[in-house]
Length: 284
Image (cartoon, rainbow, N blue to C red; front, side, top):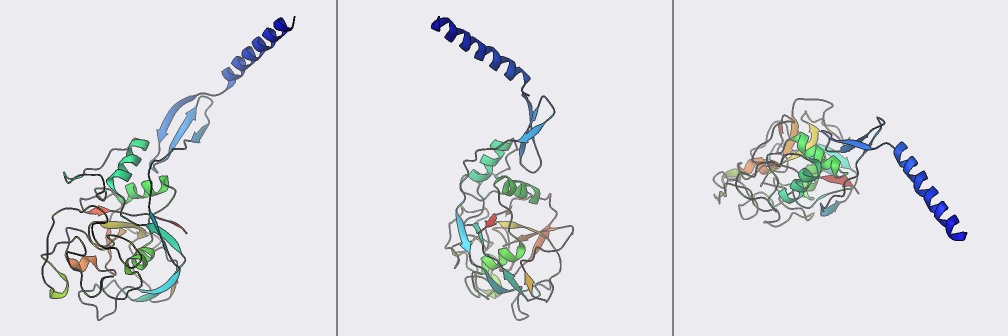
């Protein structure tokens, strides 16, 4: 009698579970959004975000809060007119120790179904990812739960407490960074022209422990390109709107003067090229 009762109970649970499962919505489609996120659409019309388990590891450097002079003084050689010197106050943040690599970005592409960017035949792995637009870089950052640096954060991190054209002082040699050594800064001696990217971390870090802040690849910032103000700014985020997003740091393809900490450039957000990459920032 007890055996029959147990079998009846088991049969009841099995049938009940079957009926319950038939009433639950089933996943019918996965959609990759432009933001880099993936959503799952169910048979009842509902949806939810798919939580992706990323194998990507970012090494972070903590940057302390502080106030610094952003831009360049009138006495700085080869400066541009848009580098108006002004004071900026920033909260603490953390920034990736290296530029985002092909290994990291390729993992993002595989997880989200995106096409992988071209490496120009130079190799992938630990080389900085290139041929990525501001839109691509932003999507990666959002997928990772972080963001691109503001222009003010980028320059503060690049300077690492210095006030000279480069964190290395009044000169930047090709033993210190990857740029076109045929065009050194301020008539200094010529150096090597490598004609391609270097693996991240190939040169000595700056005073904050960050690598390749000058040269190797341009780095996208979150800001729209716009004019500076002369007033003190606290955690500035750039212009409200614009046509170009800021890029910083110069690259393997450029003259040394473009690698100065204060130098500013901009590109349309959908533009990508063989000398543009990025790094990411998170809240400290």
